[in-house]
Length: 480
Image (cartoon, rainbow, N blue to C red; front, side, top):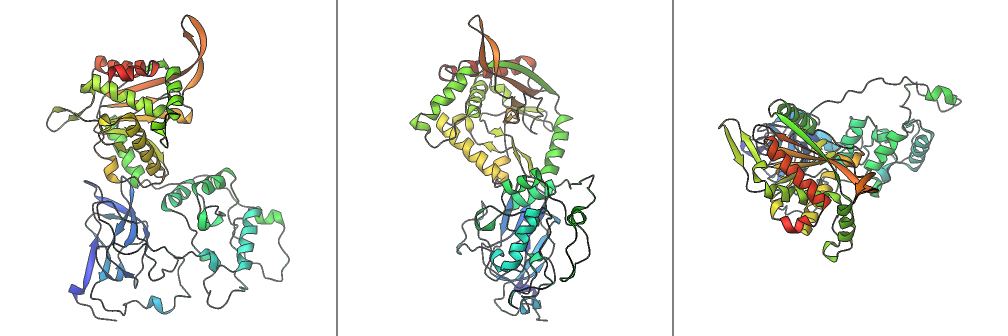
């Protein structure tokens, strides 16, 4: 084994990718011992209590050791990878001498295939972007056809490798090929109990998409039956024998990462801040008409315009009229901290759990600027790319439960905030309008607030102002 001096080996420690975080889970390694790495190259993806982020290595060298396997939760400050920066070749591990016959189910790492996305705050990498090689084209045509046919028959099994027809260079059996899917999709499949190897991808370059995973859940396939291998000369087994299996009665999902942090935060909030929730049902017909008009306005061309945009603006105006609601409770100092800025949080359901990214200084944005910020926030959350910084220092939150067809709810405060507005489904209902019963667009709003610093009068004023603006949206001009 090659002798190395301590000075030639650099230990890369798990950084604090968000303020105050103490641990992170290693989701995926993009390198293996023996691989060359360059300054700025992404070597792994980790999930903290707030988001999934990619970690770039800060120096050039050769990977000597990965200290932890995928799925391990590591404390911040603990070394996770060792890199020889001496510039010498000759890796200590002989894994590269026989790349065609790996001994584990992990896919082999080709030299120079490190991913290059840039992590916010680390600067722009100087090396060019490189992609990991696709594995799909290496599968023999006969095996690929068998795999697709197996999927169509609903068996979900992998093609037999007893008599491969591929050249000798393709020694790895097809059953060990790792499906192509982005980390959020892998997480979604894991949470839903879907085996990615049983899915026929529909995305570009053979990538499995969220829609593919949901389709697999909607039309579940039978798990691979544990049966002895059938000799090539034997007659095929009856169909009934192939699909016979025992159905699992329970699924256990480890609580960690974003879900673990959300659970702890909600319990802490519910049993620390005395919640009060008030409700109001309001006619939003005029607001819905304004939404349609704004969609045709050239100033909003290319922007996402929906009821949430005007509801957000209405809440910002209500806070401007009642600034004491935009505050927090400092338990240590026994003080109420009134914020003179509004970082508007929007609760978003993602495959990793509920997150609440916020729009910084939303109070200072025009309506088109607010629309642009909302669109970017939603897109980033759906792609699983929300950064920890985007979820810090929120002051007030909106949760839109109406998108699920729910009338309203009693939302729990986001920790550190004093108010949260829940928006219910907007439905056509009979309503007394100008003395007559007419069909109108109606919704129910619910405002939860911390009764230590927001009393019933202040909470009622804020909720009443939001309702009044949505009923008569011209108040956005007269009250702003």
